[in-house]
Length: 398
Ligand code: NIG
Ligand code: FE
Image (cartoon, rainbow, N blue to C red; front, side, top):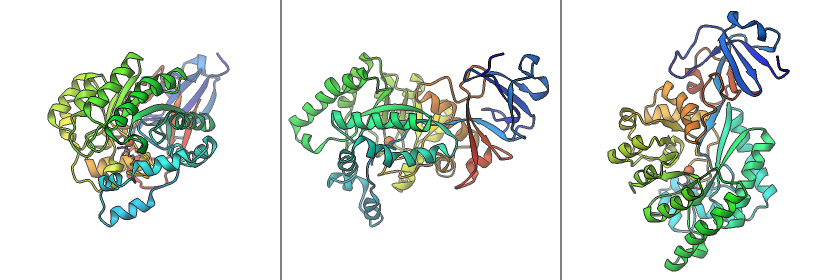
């Protein structure tokens, strides 16, 4: 038996599709960072009987959660815009007057790599403290090669510092930098993002996926398609901020490029649902942004459900529309605001969130999956979603 064999005993294993409060005490054997065996504690095979073991004393084991959409690397904050929105100014109005994403771009550009890591680390720590083991982090507040690269490097450094799995997404088309506002400059800037920044960042190994913001206040379908074409030629998978503030039909475009996920989706129509159902694209719901923008248009949950589209839920942690470094709060919001069930919400931060990142080695407790878990002192998995605020959890990464 290898020295790295480890067993968690007397644990109640939560499993997607099964009871929220499993009764039976099980053991999970871990070898070389993966699940090697899983079953009733009293049927543990002899070969594992002298593995180092942890007595879980009946606690509930889930896969470590996956936060599959965050912008948690950024400088500064936008509390002033929050105040303005409370006085009635809209998100689009703030963006049009040079605030919004652009104010975070200015604050992010002003920081060194180390300062950016320092400002962003506490947000990642908050996620980890609630059982998250994989975090997707987007760039998109640099808007030039050096600053986008700085953001992606900061994201990777956070992964190493916290010993957590970080997936980096190059959010190539998030906003236009001030230096590229006019017609020709806009086209030239997009050219440089696609033909210069993208391949260089891919060459450095910093790009796990690309993303864009498809919206009337951001980028149109033709512009997004150019990015997706270029990314596909480099074998990089696509994601898209789609139908957040209006129906731009971005989801149907993303489906044509077999995108990993389309995210937000409040204004998604039935044709868009059919398109992503066919392409197997994950629908990522971001209830924190819905909540913070006081949006009233609900994403079409019933259509997504009946079309069998996998739904993920993420924090969207960002300084503008979701200053929320809590995935558990997003889970609660997905239930209370969007009407997801507890079971759907748990699948949405495990199996479906992993799929939204193209990862199939995590998100389930099954033989062969990564040994990355959260151990909860709760009676039932519903408690994980029910409690607002503190809920102690032990992150087990072996
Ligand atoms: O996911 N929609 C665009 N991007 C972010 C918001 C970014 C910002 O306002 O800083 C989002 O909501
Ligand atoms: Fe986002």
